[in-house]
Length: 136
Image 1: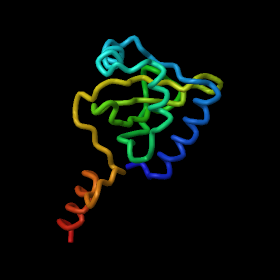
Image 2: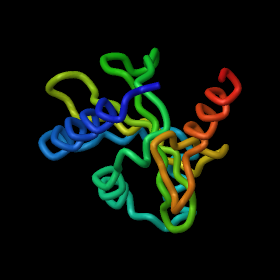
Image 3: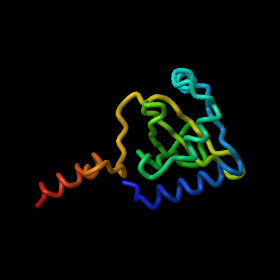
Image 4: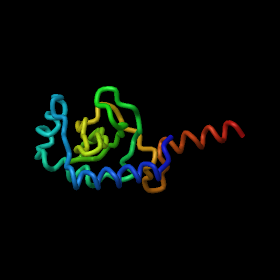
């Protein structure tokens, strides 16, 4: 699993580059546009959602991307207007905008390995604790 500091470093660099180069949204996929319509979310509001991503929103990555080469993909999730939204982003090539490949309603539950609720541990950590008890 990716260490928390690696996720935080990615988010810091992503947000800094986003301020300078902006975001290229790949809206060719109908589910990305449908989500904006269903949530009545102005396209520019997506940028605010990206600016607010935190370690707790992290789900997976970095993973290689064969379709949009140049940098790894990272997956996050966020509640937007009471709906869980799946967000796939990447840094893009040097000197270009950051990319938002996916921004749509989650089709499956998203695992958040660094998310802690009140008195509750994340699914990932619970699984590790169970494995540790089993191997003791």
